[in-house]
Amino acid sequence: MIDKVIPYGRQCITDEDVQAVVETLRSDYLTQGPKITEFEYAFARYVGAKYAVAVNNATAGLHLAVSSLAVKPGDKVIVTPMTFAASANCVRYCGGEVVFCDIDKDTYLMDVVKLRQLLVENPKGTFKGIIPVDFAGYPQNLEELKEIADEYGLWILEDACHAPGGYFVDRSGERQYCGNGRFANAGVFSFHPVKHIATGEGGMVTTNDKELYKKLCLYRTHGITKDVALLHENHGGWYYEMQELGFNYRMTDFQAALGVSQLSRANTGLSRRQEIANRYDEAFQDVQGIKIPYRAGNVYHAFHLYVIQVEDRLGLYNYLRANKILAQVHYVPVHLQPYYRELGNKSGDCPVAEEYYKHCLSLPMYPTLTDEEQQYVIDSVLAFMQ
Figure 1 (tube, rainbow, N blue to C red):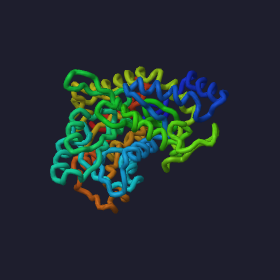
Figure 2: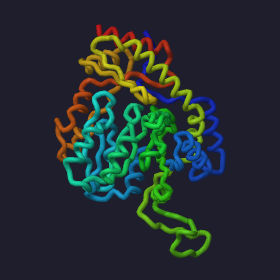
Figure 3: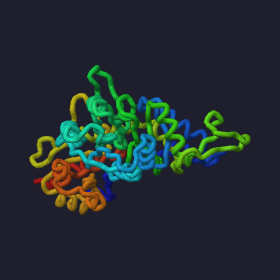
Figure 4: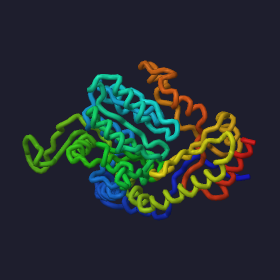
C-alpha cells in the first residue's frame, strides 16, 4: 500500500529551478525583461519554429492567435470537441462561431475524413480556419490537414498544449515537431504545472509568419508600440502609441526563468514519459476490457496523458480514488457543455467523442512517478478488472 496520494499529473521543481527564479527576483527586471526573450528564443529553437511569443497562459495565447488571424463576429471555425474548453472559447472571445468536428476512434484527434465531409457539405468560404488539438500528446498529422486547409482557404491554429517535443514523420521522412510552424499558421503551448514544462501559469505562441509574429507581439501588450518605424508621429523618446485594441497577456520574467530552467531538461522528461507509457502498455495490452493508447509508427507521442478506456469507468475511477490514486477524465466533450448546448449543439453531434468520453480515464503520468508508484497503479487497475 502506498501511503501518499498519487495524482494524474504534477510538476517537478528542482533546486536549479528555484535558484533560477531567485536570481531573477533579485535582478532589475520582474517583467518585460531579458528572461522573456531568452525563453522565447530557447523555446522556438526547441520546437523548430522561427518565432515564439511568451504569454501569461495558453488561453491567452489562443486568444492572441485567433485575434491575430483576424477572427471576426460570425466567422466559423472548426474545432475538435475532445479538448479543454479554451480551444473553442478563444473563437467565441472574438465573436466567432464554433463548429465541432468529431474525432478519430483510435487517435482521439480531429477526424480528417469527417473534416473533409463537413467542408464538402458547405459552400466554399463558409469556414475561416481549423483548430486541431494534439490530444494527450499525440501529434495531429498537419501535412494532410494542410492540404485540406489550402484547398478550402483555411488557416490552421495548432493547439499543441499537450505535446512539446512530440512529432510526426512526414511523407519525405522528415520529423515535424508540434508547433514548428511548417504546416500550421501558429501553434500554442501551455506551461501549466501538469504539463511538460511548468511555469505556474504561462504559455507560448509559435509561428514562422513574421507579420503574424508582429501582430502577436502588439496584441500581447495592449496594442501599444514604441517602435519608431511604426509610429504615426513622434513626440520624443518617451512616446508610444496604442495602434490596436490589445490585451495585457505578458509573462513575468521569473516565470520565464523557471521556463528556461525546465526547458533545459525537457527531453529527459519526455524520455521518462515514454518509459512509463511503455510499462503501462506492457501491463495492460493483453487485459480484456482495457483499451490502451494507439501509437502509429510514424508518430512520437509526447504523453502528457496516458488514457485507457474501460467499460465501468466510474467504478474504476472511484476504486482508484479510494486507494489514493487520483486518476482523471479528459475531457467532457466541449460541445456538451451547457454554454455550447445553448448555442445549438446537442448529444449525437459527435458520436465518437461522446462514446470515448463514457469510457476514458487518465492514469498517473509524470516524470517523477516512481516505478514503485506506477506498479501500485498497475496492480490497482488489474485488481479492479479481475
